Image 1 (cartoon, chains in turn red, orange):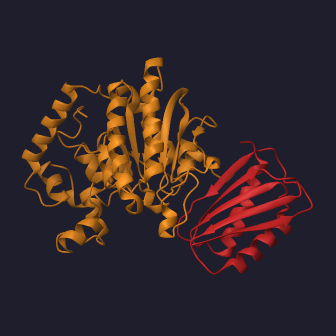
Image 2 (cartoon, chains in turn red, green):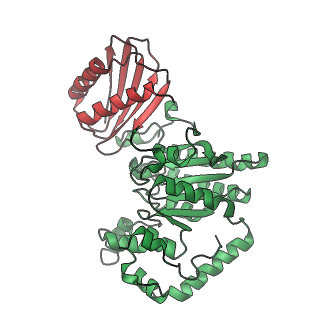
Image 3 (tube, chains in turn brown, blue):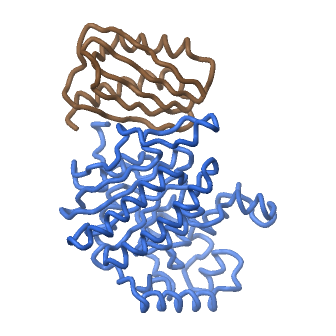
Length: 104
Length: 308
């Protein structure tokens, strides 16, 4: 298991007014993402807890690209990962941002 | 999440716990207790180098079913096999005790347990075993207070170990084809007694012994449904008003039913022998036929006693 944080500064505040959402399941090859509107509007943060050790560099690249694409300003993400592939991680992160745009 | 499929149209087996709850209850009526934002996670898993889940693998809360308030708990069978740990168990015990205490004020109408579990979580086994005992006691208290407790089983983990016992303690049990309900799981039996006693890789055998169709035909489940979330919802709505009172007469009737079942079928070695003895049509094909054909079968005598 490995735990770390990835921080970013982005242009825009994330759309919507929902306070929190959760998507995915911590299962083999999958992950759960809890997202909360908890930061100043240009900051974002991902707390990663992954079952697989040694891939921090790839996590940081995937998350920074997600920050650049989605501009999730003000959102704090918490991840419990069961060994998901990078594309699954990106998908879940984008799903969580999409959920924050909807009504609870 | 998907805009293509309404939640109640989704498949129970494929849906995660939160989608099952969303589709089972009236739209947008669910309010969660101890939600994932509270990070009520297992304090034990990190010692085993395992990542946790923000809800410890169970969603509990209240909502409305056909307009009436119910309490609901849903296990996530894909997180550690839906197994019971300390926090996971405590959330369910708390929900059941809240239902019991609510009975004095007239609610909830019922408690729905969406079980999907391999049993006790090995990494926190003592806490998990204690939780199972507390849950069983709490179910008895809820039922004694006049509130039915329904088990809905159709997930990938089935309902095994303590989860199988919990299922059997419920007022009513609903299953779909994927469901398996038992105490010792196939792998456990094979490990302890050898592959000749039970081949856990023989899926047909597993389902013949503890699968939904066998459970339904022998009275181990009260309702067999097709696999949509909507089907479980309709079954729950239909069964709640007819749940038997939890009293001595009910238990004695169930004891009689089980004794008769043992007398009739005790010497059978496999499910088709039971079906043949019970006079069911094409006993060898029970596992293969469609849900519609299966639902058209008249259950054997003794399976439909209103005893549980």
